[in-house]
Amino acid sequence: MILYSTKNKSYQVGLKEAVMKGLPDDNGLFMPLDIPALPTDFIQNLANFSFLEIAEKVCKTLFKGAIPDEDLKTLLKNAFDFPAPVVKLDEQKYILELFHGPSLAFKDFGARFMAQLMSYFNRGESRELTILVATSGDTGGAVASGFYKTPGIRVVILYPSGKVSMLQEKQLTTLGHNISALEIDGTFDDCQALVKQAFLDTDLNQHLRLSSANSINIARLIPQALYYFEAYKQLAKGGDPVVFCVPSGNFGNLTAGLLAAKMGLPVHHFIAATNANDVVPAYLEHGKYISRSSVRTLSNAMDVGNPSNFARMLDIFLGSDESSTWNNMRNQVSGYAFPDQETQIAMREVDEKYNYTIDPHGAVGYLALDAYQKEHPNTRGIVLETAHPAKFIDDVEETLDRKIEIPARLAALADEEKEATFLKPEYNSFKKLLIERYSG
Image 1: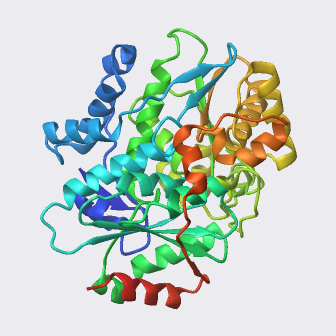
Image 2: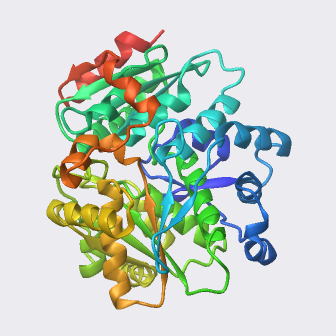
């Protein structure tokens, strides 16, 4: 498997280098040089395959022998030991529950796969690998869980102070061992900027072997494509066209869906659902991409003002000029944005109408799907429910005016002691801390 940088197609590397490096030297993002189509009969018979069988077929096709078949099978089995069920709300609306992994968020799919893949590629290395990851909520907990006690790998998680839920914070600050957390006095975009600058710092990279566990790493993106196939197979064949509605922040999840579609999954359309941080819906409407500082919302994991994976989306839809790229994208992706007040109304509507408890991010997705289906009624829509509602228990209970059940493994975190280093969003301070703590 060969991958290239979105900033320079002649910059090409193999799968191992792309995964372990995380980011190209030119600050682009790695993309597969070739995205092969899966056999038509495989797509038509998805219902006959288990999730692991689907995962094996998709990865084997994409990796092209980069990992031996038996090693790949073991890797996938270790990564995915939890389901991704589709729940029917009505004939037009469905929910893909992606919160059945250990951290109760969709990031478990990417983080556990990446942990297995990096551990596989890291065998025989004498120097420890330091993984830097910025999180706006769920990524941190999933990465912490996925890499916990992985030999030869340590993880440093950067998160914005006061901008993640209490239980999200506990998930990434209480494990210890090879997992440490930096509480940044700023936004998610500040955290992400520090991580990106670290990768481009040649001096720092002489002191540390660095990699990333954000969705800028291709190893996070590939496994997220797998549950699109799993969701599609769970809908009855022969019905209305299928659309996927994706609550979106850094846009890795939606980009993974586009990858699945490029490999042959017959997705009719994608819907990008955002909160007030609506830079991509604004681009889809006007054709101009204007990043800005993120604003805090109820759906905090989507509070991103400059989504990294937008570069991959542009690459997928690349045309002869800016206008053709824009038209290519909006032919396959629609964007919708909603404020917190409407999000809360949607949470109550789903609770009362369907007796289903949805989290704030899923509620934004529900709103976007509903808006799309008003214009395109003859479709079946799948909303990606990206996290268990209990991860946002205060907001959910206040909105619904009732108690909700907390899974035991989440409830147990409430009494755990938080361990995090508070840091201003200043690169030199960040670099100094990394060298002092982790070099040598």
